[in-house]
Amino acid sequence: MTFAPSEERFLFAEERPAEVPHHGVWKVLIVDDEPEVHSVTRLALHDVVFAGRGLELISAHSASEAEDIMRRHSDIAVILLDVVMETDNAGLELIRRIRDTMRNTATRIILRTGQPGQAPERDVIIRYDINDYREKTDLTSSHLFTAIYGALRAYRDINALEHHQEGLEEVIAATSALFECQSLSAFTRTAEYRFPKLLAKTTASRATNIDMIWAKRVDGDNLDVIAATGALRPLAGCTTVSDLPEILLQRFDELEKAGSIVTGTWLGGLYRESATLEYVFYMEGLHALTPTDRNLLDVYMRQATSAFDNLVLSQQLDETQREIVYRLGEAVESRSQETGNHVKRVAEISRLIARGAGLSPRDCDIIFHASPLHDVGKIAIPDAILNKPGKLTADEWEIMKTHATKGYEMLANSERPILKAAAVIARDHHEKWDGSGYPEGRRGEEIDIMGRITAVADVFDALGSDRCYKKAWPLDNVLDLFRRESGKHFDPKLVDILFDNLDTIKEIQQRYSD
Image (cartoon, rainbow, N blue to C red; front, side, top):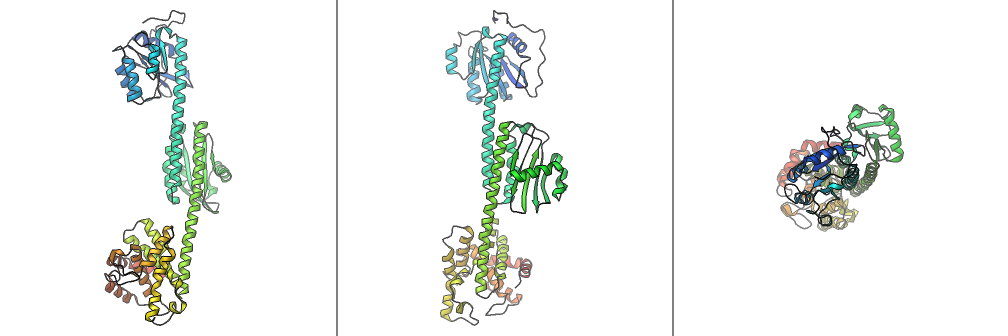
């Protein structure tokens, strides 16, 4: 080894200088087969501090040892790498393994050699992904300091870019997931799952004293704490807003005005479902947030507010649609001089049977909201036929039967799931399991499951209710009919489900009695 011929020549240390503790340090890997190089480098760099963090100097005396260290330490910031070690190009081969095999593009590599003829600078710079090339004779203490400082700055900036890119990707993923939520419960679950993942992409991931509360506020002062952690955990039992600490009341007031806030120490969001119901999220203890972290979290909080508002609006539209469907069903029943409670009972019984038949929660919900329109086609039937107190003539009966097809035609072109299901129910609820029904004489499973279910619910409730043309049947008579018609008029599996749930069905009929 040849030393620099100036007054800045390195000095050998009699003993290894003290190093900064491992926590919060920049890791620098010294790779050289000459022990003196390690000693001199340590002496020159032992007191270097960059961005408030010292250096942890790690030694490797061969390329293979350095590769092993790199695999165990993914956060090496800088490598001071010799070229000639166990082979003439060991250092250059190590560079390729670091960049190509390990896929490490962040670590800064300073190549230094005492034999520049073995690795010409121009050729090496072009062929290898290194960040600096120095001859050992050039590396005075000040030059080494400059090289290390510049490399650390580059490593920090590269990691910051990668970190912020990951954070932005997580913001996009998290907000996309929120916008996909179809219910408030799903929104809450998604937010609870996604927010910690987003927080892990910020410097707040190193904080250990983060406190959080997620609560529902009703009618201004009533409080339902959904979750509380850390120092805020004792608030889990609070039932009124006035029970909260003064600082939280101030934060809630600020959120009431701003919607969402992100500061260097706390963040929060207020999500309003209606004039009397809102959700409040608050987190404190984020003392390590950088301005960029705050921006990322602010974007997320604002997008979460938009997602929540969209969800509430969507639910209000769905509820409006469902109410219109429900009231239309009631209007049809009232026109035929039947009570609106019939469609309520049919809806409840249909959902109960659908659950017993193993339909998905979504399909159970759809049949609940669609079944009230099973007789919507009766709008097209003349009053004289619809409300005739006596038996219909053959011609009148043929006209009456058209209500199934007319109901289907009214709704079939809709793209709304509830109305599409209502169209099928209107068409199929008078079909019979043995094929003797109308309008198309479908049989067995050719009849849509929603039509089969509504048929059971409709006939069961109609037989047990007064009509303009008959009195309500006793329950035993209704049950006898279903036993006889199981496998003929009705799907036998659905009849079994009906009988298995008679107690619940009686409760439904009592709750919505005429």
